[in-house]
Image (tube, rainbow, N blue to C red; front, side, top):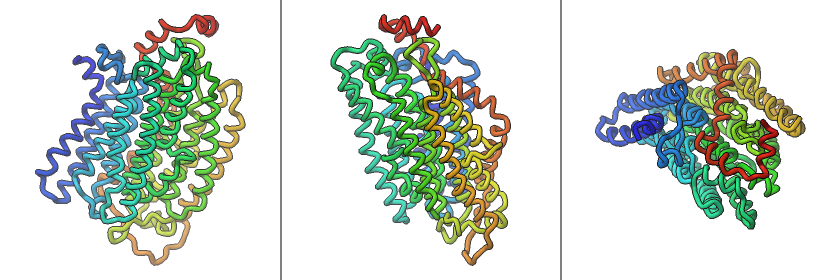
Length: 527
């Protein structure tokens, strides 16, 4: 039991931070310094969670010993990689928040508690090994994010955005729950291991229910990652939310959603049963990806608000990542028809999350009279008035556009290479569309840098927030974009290890023992 508790230490650190903030904050004085303490505390505990993930990753041997843990949570390389990534997103969001909240008149302690709870929910999602733990983590994250989007109580746009996100998110959760119910009825269990075993030995007559379960589960996750046609909530939610929370949504929420989605695709909905359905999952994902990236980029071209533009950009990047989900390699432990994802999606998420956090941290520095100034024309002169923030915003735009030698370029390069390797270039047309979309996106990303550096200043009154923790947030993000971009090999290797760890050792053993006879020749041929 103690061994398994140690393996969940990153989650326990995040949960402790949430509960401590919630209990202690009412006893602290309502001063700016007291509120700033919670930002530093949150960044410190998030860093501790990252350190715990690193220690577990380094020492290995991360298989749970007890059934109660092993069937619901894991500390696999994939879980640790994604947990560290969401903790990093939380750390930079905590650093970006204190001064911004004071300027906006929304400096309340519950903001930091909700941020911790959202991060804990994300960590549970990416560490889950059952439908129950996945849904619990999803709801903890979602409820916290709904409130954080509407946290600017005096802003009608923020409250409206939170309400829209809550209503549409509840519908998506209902779809997911129905899909999970059908999976439970088909397999007789809620853990990914039991679902894999059921699909390894498919029963006659279950095809229709499995079709329904897969389609409803996919629809729910397409909503969570903001894919077309479930993207309508994204622009309003991103624009109305506090700017640091918008950065947290574009990074942490997307990381958690794709981490859980990869587990559902490769650890649960995999095997002979899916092959016999003749349901073209990979083709469906690639098609959704192409449509999503095209719609997102075309709509982003017309936006004058940088926050709203980045919302449509997030939709486009969801399309890139959906296409990346088809990149897989054979599972050496189980053989055909089982596969594991490559490191394309995890590595791409690192670059996208860091660039998004850098961009929104830089946008958090601009305001006037308690109002945000995030329109393109309102950023004119930023490069001269606040050179560091201007440089961070410009670098983030360049990375999101995929310009070398930034991290965003190598993320796209890895994704393109892995997708092209699938079935001897089967998805070449999709890759060509992705490249064309990247060229389109370069226009609106680089347009922001033109406004920051090259347009003459107007008469708009603006203030620039200069605060140590916000500077640290921008500096860390900027350093990560440059250093990992120039030396990407180690991060790529870790992402590949994470992808290969989508199934736990106990899951592989259980499924291998119950593979149907007709899969054995294919497995032997694979070896």
